[in-house]
Image 1: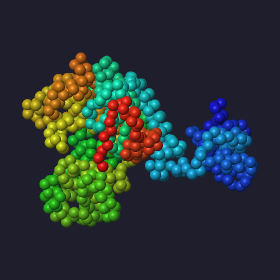
Image 2 (image 1 turned 60 degrees about the horizontal axis):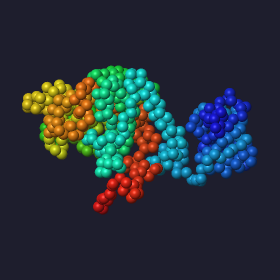
Image 3 (image 1 turned 90 degrees about the horizontal axis):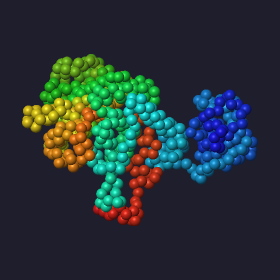
Image 4 (image 1 turned 90 degrees about the vertical axis):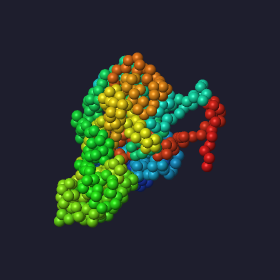
Length: 591
């Protein structure tokens, strides 16, 4: 027997009829039929049970209790006259003998109706998150998260990985995003940083002789919020393997993830191993994105040669990309709205025309395309009722707009998206370097600690001018599912000589590397094994499994888009005494 209850509110069945029970939970609703009859819904973590008050005294007691008060009810189980097949407890009801208030709700009006909280304003939901979480539909996502994390832990352990926790207070290092800094009281003027990822620590573990490491790691980055990114903190399945190649990492995740997605996902289909491998340049050319959604059958074609000189101004001197949508029967209103949405997301203006049922080019920029109809139809393989969306600009801009066209049209036009599945792929062969937008000089494209494909030899060739450094690829990879990047990973650059040479190409010398990454550089000089790893985002994973569009729906206590916890009032001001202890003086920004 549990305190205040013999059974939960989701437990009683017809076989329990006649039992004397005690239930505890939140009083969700009271429906008074008459002075001597009322129906009460009692809810706890496990479900709901109907309580039937059938005396004036008992009806009066329940009427005096505010909704969402916690109560304990003792009574007898009986079969319901009017059964509810939608509820596990729908065959029974409890006739109460006593009701005790365990925790009174002191508010006659709630911020929102509990079982419809998802329809409420998000600011209200976050402010009263403890009420929002009482909604079984909201609670379900948190339970899912717990089950997924448990399954991940079990699977990683079965694959021989050790769960090792790494420090939360560490040194600030340049890893791409802004650090969250923590002042060190005993070291005036110095700061700890919360880790953006356990990257350096897990590589140090490989150098220390641990063969397989993982943890459900908290990461902290001062970034803006997005639908698939929570500001402040997030969690990832962090893993690293010694004496491992890219294929070793792939094999582990291809074994771990599909069963979990198939078991816990909204959809019961998930890609089987091996996942499709798509080189970065191919992904950008074919899908206009390094995060392709393989559930969509639309792809991008280059039509610069055939349309670049058609006389349409925005095409002149630019790269032109096309997305063909077959069997298209949508209205002009649909076209205008969809392309306007694409422009908002991509920042590039899309164009269009279509081949009507008679095989004539109509709509959009038809007057520029019609004179070269045969060449265009041949190049794109067009058939009647095909719709062609186009983008133009410098290569990156044209690709980006085309990629948004693929995703938007694929999701909006019937027949082009097999939605109910989890389609995984690996994006491989990322460029090692790029030309920086602001500097105009060579910079690392992604992770500077990735091993360049070709090792030291390819770096020396670039240094001597024998090859263009922009052609160097890295042994780096992304895991993508349904158009969402779950993770980046890489074979690590574990050789100090190769590391120094990689940094020298971006104008950073050995002293810079030693200063920025002292522990890792020094550890590698003592003999580091080849190692590789990855860190799929747990939050994004659960978001996909739950079929949610916002990551905040699967986090117990998320921040809002402005990185504020409106429930707890964070960030908050602190006292002058606290500031003095930390040797901090505030300089308020000028208004």
